[in-house]
Image 1 (spheres, rainbow, N blue to C red):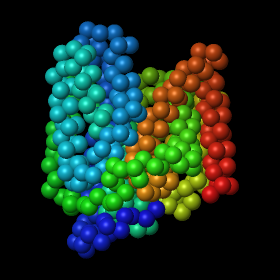
Image 2 (image 1 turned 180 degrees about the horizontal axis):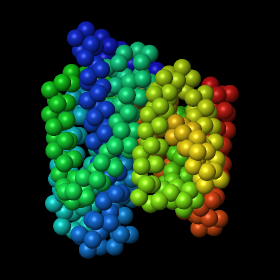
Image 3 (image 1 turned 30 degrees about the horizontal axis):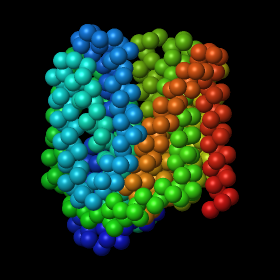
Amino acid sequence: MQSPPTASATLNPAETSSSGLQILIMAVAAFIIVTTEFLIVGLLPALSRDLNISIALAGQVVTLFAFTVMLFGPVLTAKLAHVERKKLFTLILMVFAASNVLAAVSTNIWIMALARFIPALALPVFWGTASETAEQLAGPGQSGKAVGRVYLGITAALVFGVPLGTLAADSVGWRGSFWILAAISFFIGVLMHLVMPQLPVSASAHPDQKQTAILRQPRFLAHLLLSILTFTSLFTAYTYLADILERLGGIPAGQVGWWLMGFGAIGMVGNHLGGSMVDRKPLAAMVLFLVLAGAGMLAAVPLAPNHTWLIVALVAWGIGYTALFVVCQVRVMQAGAHAQALAASMNISAANAGIGLGAIFGGIGIGHFGLGSIGIIATLIAALAVIVALLMMRRP
């Protein structure tokens, strides 16, 4: 994927030399955003007690976030694609700071729902524009690595942000966790404003008919389908990984969190591998990591009682799982090269659709065939994704 020519022509040598720091700041922003998105999962019990609502009702704020991202992301990304990136990123971080403050002072489910709805509108705009901007900062031929570094913020949030936030909640309460996130969001927003260069918006980023034309291209739609299948496969199993570890692996409930942290930590290897491989052969990288993740998911269930072999299965699963985040994002952006911001946002929507479908399919599988069926179901969906990728490779 090539960076927009306007960007490369504008950045001077000083800006180019500092691109590493700027991409690091974007990765930290990604860390904050993903932590804000997923932290609430660990806070639901305390939140439900404090707001005097059922755990089921409290859980609907998670559903609200995911479907808001899926439904509004592409439209908002297209509408805001013309905004200068430094200004846009600073605004997004300030929105997250304000929404975390609102969550911290929530007195009922309706205020909390609003506090979750607002950042869900901004999240896909960040991903759509941050990936493209990382390419601009990194230069030609380095897009995969640059996006991989930004996506490292996702891995760091899943590994450290959520568990550390949950631990912090034990010390300062669930409201305190949101206050901390609000303060960090504000600080990084200010840092973003001070350090990031002013980046031109590529001609393809303007919300016109040329941008939306990618939605009528069969091959681009095939790439979105591939992302939906991929995330459906991954989250059919990952949504219930804690249950697999505890119920099938016999791991004490108090230790499951450390196993999940290890799963995320090994995913950092996948993040690096995915970012390194995707620029050369994106569909081949898809097949490789789908096979790796599928093998891990399939093996983890029967190997769960044997913890040594379970670790081997989780290593394969974790590497493939995290690599596919990066590969899917860059792959779809390549397919929509003339409207990269919209393409990236469409991939985020596809990913959220897959996440929701995966949780549904996994739940249905458990209800009808038991927890032991999860690996088989997830791997069958991964196999379908591999078939789609192979067919796409035969038809350039």
